[in-house]
Image (cartoon, rainbow, N blue to C red; front, side, top):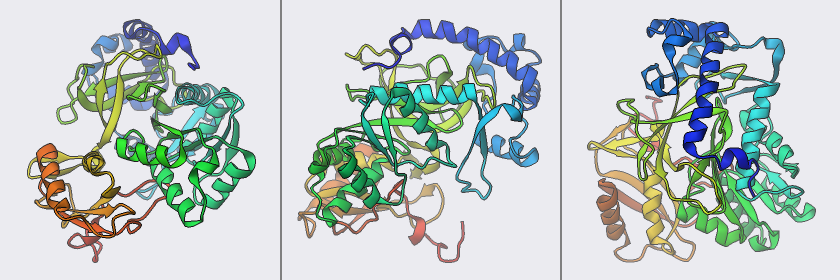
Length: 446
């Protein structure tokens, strides 16, 4: 099914032409309403909307960084100088988790909230959710923006059973007693549910799940993770990716299962850039880069060239569903990247290697650096969990695995194996890099 055929099947060049008009209107709006962007653009040499130009000229504009949003909210609390609508027009205020100490607030008008809901409806319909379907949701409804997923399910017409994180017994009971066939959660939680059901004597196939959509972290599109979940529950797994400041379900995967489509067409413009230089990269098959977003019809807190720090690989293969445009698979975030003797390594790349060792390993792993920081000296310590049928590692497994990592990722590793069930199963996001063994960890050094 396609929720919004006109938008989702529109040729990419036609969408660009439509977005061009919306972009010029959004820039005028910023000059009129946002003191943050008035100052930012004028300091960059753009003193009027006409000077900014159109989407063909967007690469000349400065990026907006998350740290700038934090700084303006600290200086002009609670929303910062980039709020462009009266506070009385806000209908929802979400917040970040505040891992840096102070949460950032995200205000949405009714129109902004409708946009978030539409994107979720497009993305989750693509993933197989349908009107009348009973769905359990493993994301908390508030105060975090992930809770906006509920509005998208309302637009689809699903029967939503909110559960949230932290109570797997309640989740499984709801599936059993209410006959839910769909689930929305992180891929880590999907894996966690498998082990929880096994520990509690519940046959995962007996739950009757037909489809799962994962979000919140990379992994739902990884063949190893997807394969384990699909085999355990007998359901399809599709991946979605959002960014709270822009929208939920910015990217979502359909039944073709070969990458996520761009869902907020008409609402958001997306660029692909070189993460090191910031220069634009073409949307070509096999291209890699960082995603950058610009709001086109945002009222409360529009963002211009917002750096996501999400790194993706692009595919341009035709889609039999009729959806058009590039598809992506997220390979990681700048925040997670390590540099090992000059080689950039995203932790999720290790998992792609583990996929070739199914039956020997569970797919769970942790990188445990010896030093804090991005730059690491080889060999990089990696702890790998064995499969449930492997009490000990088969002879030669470590050497074969290290060789595969070295050949494919150009990184030398030091592997150690732990029994199945040793590494933590998370009910939200998995921690792939653990600095607890790093020098200075005990003293709390950074």
